[in-house]
Amino acid sequence: MALKITVIGTGYLGATHAAAMAELGFEVLGLDVVPEKIEMLRRGEVPMYEPGLEELLRRHVAGIEGSTGRLRFTTDWAEVGAFGDVHFVCVNTPQKHGEYACDMSYVDSAIASLAPHLTGPALVVGKSTVPVGSADRLARELAALAPAGEGVELAWNPEFLREGFAVQDTLHPDRIVVGVRSDRAEKLLREVYATPVGEGSPFVVTDFPTAELVKTAANSFLATKISFINAMAEVCEAAGGDVAKLAEAIGYDERIGRKFLRAGIGFGGGCLPKDIRAFMARAGELGADQALTFLREIDSINMRRRGQMVAMARDALGDGSFLGKRVAVLGATFKPDSDDVRDSPALNVAGQIHLQGGQVTVYDPKGMDNARKLFPTLGYAGSAIEAVRGADVVLHLTEWAEFRDLDPAELGEAVERRVLLDGRNALDPAVWRAAGWTYRAMGRPSA
Ligand code: UDX
Image (cartoon, rainbow, N blue to C red; front, top):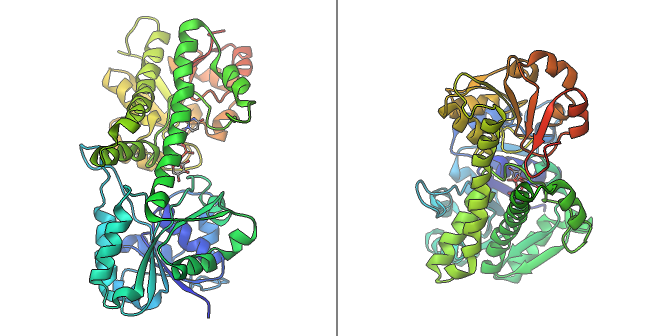
């Protein structure tokens, strides 16, 4: 009989994983502790913007016309415990308030809520990003709390999906990594992932600590690549070089590769910044803090970029002050194709300029509601053209395709001064300059 799967937590990770499991043919039950989220999902609505996810969900949610009916949602732990052969834990592990360390409270409470309902054999699979050593501790807790005792096992299966590509990354992963302690756990996970593995996704089997570390190591490497190129951008700025050309040229070396070498205002979001900090905190607890001191530098190069963008905008205004100046900000989310504004470099820059007296107007294709909640005192406009009306300087801070398609001539008619600062190195300087704009980007010569 086909495996029955539950997914605990229905955020970016859980909602996508639940829909993907249904797409792979399993009966799936998703749980969240927030009843409003469950109500939305039952109607086939996704609580965030993620391309393709709503369509995938609607194809499977029970009660939606034409759906397979394989995907249901609940808030009831007992129902989840009774239903699943395999339970995926997909809850949030944010940064602790005022500390570097990871807040494990959602994972801990998911295990504590689920375990008492596990009366028969089951595999609990952690997907959340956690400090190394967590899986070992959680396995002991599960064994102590679950009525089925040793019949309940834990496995660790980190998730590498990117926001904006969550559906594609989940259905066709680069690799599947599982930390297991028994052949039975490995066999169950091979069954769950038979389709992507059959299509060529490598399946890496390892122990708990290695599986946990693969995730933090991968994100640390990506963060390092971005901060490396941003450090090169700083040197280019000082020396008059062009970081975009430099990135292209070093990227042709296959050992380096071209991806994740786009210089600009740096990385943000709910993962990279908090993951490298939690990794440093955990290494400290393990007495291995020296091994990761470089991540402190990666973090500070990254955070410095935001201030440098603000300084570049102030310089562009000529008289060294934002007072009385209109600043248009294109982009609010931490990356395009997402409505996520967590630790968004764009909003951080907008907020700093606002605090320094600038009159800021923000426009983002999908992130406006979330941005308004987080920064209610900024100005907002319903379109790019409205945002730039009367602007003394225009800042391009999130590289949405919509902004690449803007007409520089049309925008030029709306602004007070044709000055564009590209914080993402994503627009074509020649096109903007040809339309009479002063175009400047981080790490590149002025003209
Ligand atoms: C990241 C990892 O890529 C993913 O594997 C993991 O599962 C979760 O964390 P995500 O947070 O969705 O995914 O975003 P990502 O695409 O990695 O981008 C992170 C940030 O880096 C964004 O703010 C982006 O704008 C920035 N970035 C990315 C750069 O500044 N330059 C680049 O070259 C690439």
